[in-house]
Image 1 (cartoon, helix red, strand yellow):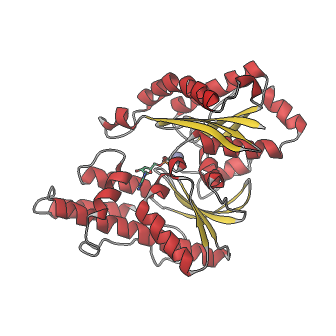
Image 2 (cartoon, helix red, strand yellow):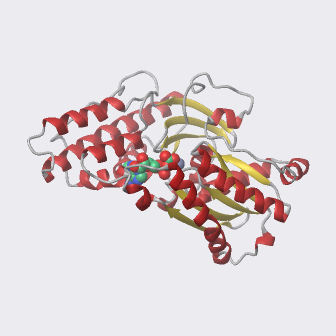
Image 3 (cartoon, helix red, strand yellow):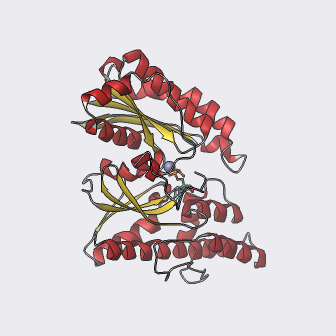
Length: 358
Ligand code: KG4
Ligand code: ZN
């Protein structure tokens, strides 16, 4: 089965082609980071317009790279939500147009389900069950992934996401959007322990987390600095910030393993590209004879391959009648606000997440 995956929920246009026998055949990503940088964050209208410009070009590129004709496609998978409404609509329009033209099924994928399953594109790929630590710009969550479609929320941030804290810290340190890679680079030159920042909820008995206090601590340090542009100060503060985030995430991961008895951990989402986090989790898991899996580096941030993978797994669970119905659905919508538990069980309302914006 060959599935074309399309991701356009935020500021990356991603297209990929996956084959159920041969794995990932090709993928291409266009990032809008340079375009949004001047505004310090993503401008939704600009994002939508750029997705329109890129998505068909990337699709052609991927098909050519994979030496596949579009008539050989068996299905299309597309990010249905959560994300920016206009941006999501671009991907959905293209996916459904392709589905209609080729008379093949189109499946909508939850963006976070894509991230959760992105480590299945790694070699070796993790078996179920595993604990997933999702750390992106909008989410910081622990999930118990029992099987495809079985996702139990174990704990999450009560305020800012870890990626958001990276972005805000970068801004305070005078670095460009998106802040993760910049703060990580700065931190490498910093002295460990020179600046010690709070580790919020480190010892709380739950897997919930909080990162907004950390951001305030960075703000206070910048305000009190004699010279906030001093290189050593910036590097030490970045180091203090990264060490605090990493300590909390590692401690909570260890707690999640103890609570669930599961010793396989998957880390996904943009922050999983962070070198310090990777090194600390590898070490913590090695000490406990646990295994940690990361998506391939290029597939940590948003991409079409994770959507193709999640879509393919869904299609493989569908029977013939369901696939036929998915090929005959000629109207479509997107879900800018959509929780993963709703996606896994469409009728369920998760009381912990019902009030949250996604
Ligand atoms: O998963 P993602 O691409 O988009 C969302 O779905 O949010 O994650 C983006 C986030 C941003 O906050 C970015 O600063 C962060 O991931 N990020 C990093 C690194 N690379 C990206 N954070 C820390 N270290 C990195 N190397
Ligand atoms: Zn994402």
